[in-house]
Amino acid sequence: MCSGLMNYLRACFRPRSEGYVHKVSDGGGRREGLLWHKDIGQHVNGEFSMAVIQANNLLEDQSQIESGSLSTCDSGPFGTFVGVYDGHGGPETSRYINEHLFKHLKRFASEQKSMSVDAIRKAFQATEDGFLSIVTEQWTMKPQLAAVGSCCLVGVICNTTLYIANLGDSRAVLGRAVNATGDVLAIQLSSEHNVNIESVRQELRSLHPDDSQIVLQKHNVWRVKGIIQISRSIGDVYLKRPEFNREPLYPKFRLREPFRQPILSAEPAVSVHPIHPLDRFIIFASDGLWEHLSNQDAADMVQNSSRKGIAKRLVKVALREAARKREMRYSDLKKIERGIRRHFHDDITVVVLFLDSNLVSKSSSTTKWPNMSLKGASISAPSKALAPCS
Image (tube, rainbow, N blue to C red):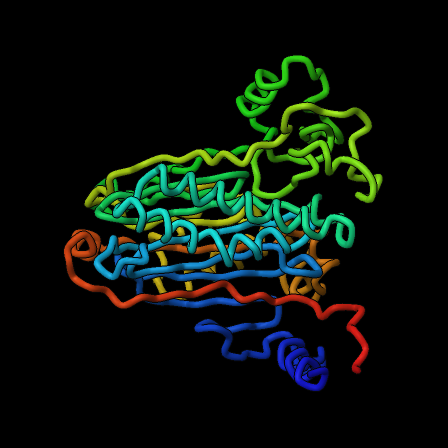
């Protein structure tokens, strides 16, 4: 068993002497050092492009595209699901979401025989409950799981309708054609839950009127209880359940004062949008992209570029901007290893979903579509402490 594990690790983590641009096949995409990308693919409603760049020692971003039947019934509904999960404190929560959220959504859609806001909300809650059960089971052995969480951005296209659900500060941006010259208007579809936004701070204060320190500003950045920037997430149970705000959780995570009601919420903001014939594409991306690119700049780049490899190009433009901000060359930034790289930019996930109006209308019919499933690659460092061979 140990020899098999070591062979797996050797395959995943090549020596640096093989070079940064070593390319291998990986789950339908390709890997170039810390970059994984699927240049072009087909979903029920059109084409897509996908890319992930790692900055953390362990990749905390997870993502997936599922297309075809969106329920356990072969008769439908048919459509496309996109998930972007931006983890923090570790990769465990985002990995859990990547394995369970879509399965829960298929189950609830099957029970209701349709896609709905209610099915999406139930899928989010079931995922939250499932991760809580893992934290509870492993509390004495792995108390740090209580301090791991993830943003969660989901898009579902079904029956010419687009559903957007979000927790945290990942973002979905629609590109809509506005005139005959080919220009597009960038329309943000997702509601964000970052306390650097005044309305989010006001919401938290209204929910916690007796806590004058529910949001604090440290080093010119607003944070919930001076700890975390987002007000909604999956996981982070130490800020939701008082029983986890104690030993054996590490002291740096524990709040000094007890709390009665959850500080963070797992309730997603869900919106419903009829797909318009002028809607050209949707950009789903973790906060790492939006730190360096505006909505309109990203939409213009997608509109004016070849579809093939566009997600990878968006990532690279963000990296060039990150390098510029630090007054360094992009070529030098590429040489910085994971872990240390986090001081320059975050993990970044980008999924660009192109909308073909003819395919969108056809997917609402009784035509049976083949299923397609793709997950962003997990490019992570090997464990520092492997169990000894027995």
